[in-house]
Amino acid sequence: MSLRRAEALARRIAPRDGLLPHVTGDDGRWELLSPLDAEDAALTRLPWTGGFVAGQLWLAGEHERAAVVTDLLRPRAAQPTTHDLGFLFWPSAVLGLCATDDDCYRVLGLRAAAALAKRALPNGVIQVIGALDDPEHRGRTIVDTWPNLLLLWWAERQGMAGAADTAAAHLEATLPALLRDDGSTFHAARLADDGAVLEQGTINGFAAGSTWARGQAWAMHGLASAHRATGGYRHEAERAAGWFLDHLADDPVPPWDFAAPAGGPLDASAGAIAASALLELGWEEDARRLVGALVTTCLNPGDADGVLLHCCYRQPIGHGLDCATVWGDFFLLDALKRIEAPDRRLDPLS
Image (cartoon, rainbow, N blue to C red):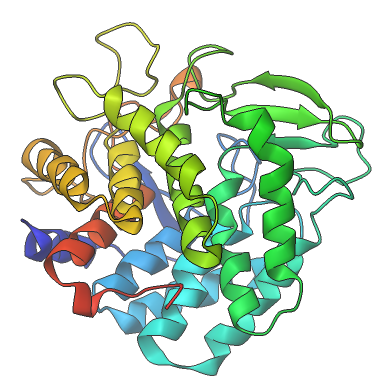
């Protein structure tokens, strides 16, 4: 397809004065963030995307710059303040270990996994944000946590006892709240200490009962990774994947929310995440079709920043409505590697 073009675009990304690319602005250039400072547009108020900068550099073979980015993230590893530790450290530390076999990345990944595990409540929920005893946030979860669990599945394989149990407990607690019977997902929920579902709805989506496209893709990726790690969750992963594919329109680039009025923003990053998940499930024909559509319509043809255009960051607050995103770029590159050069792909669960 277009792996060579995607790799060339990915190699242009770089930190600048301790700041990392995040999403592109109206001028087509990266908005830059410190990985250590508050990020007001983020749900968790913390930067969550820097791991995907390191990840695409590892995938593109730019090991020196990937190491620089991973080092910028290092102080976050011991801070158990967010569920996003998985997003920060499996594309950076775990893929760094895959790329270099340097044990410093194993140590870093395990430190982050231990911090993530500290966010687990007695009912199993890995709380998304806030102090665990904060009544405003206690028991709050979002579907985005499921792909973060990849860090814990990996950590168990690296000798961190109980990591897989923590990941499985979170899935068992939150599946009934987030995965609907038809395979679609709620974005957000809140669970009581006894596991009862108190709230279901959305934060980034169109409406409480709608299906936010990137959330559905996160569910697919998280469940596919859980199946790969445990042998379980296949039925749930296929339900989520089947729903996603059944609800793509004639234009296979997903809308930002499947219930949103026609003519709104697209979210190519949801398509890239979904394609990576489909490949993890072995649904190669569907994945190839989706990746082909993304490459044809959204691969950056010019000099703007980013690899994958026409992504949507957070439509409800009007931020990044037609942009490139570092996570969209990462997952497209990962999917292209799986299809065109599987022997060169970095596999976090190898």
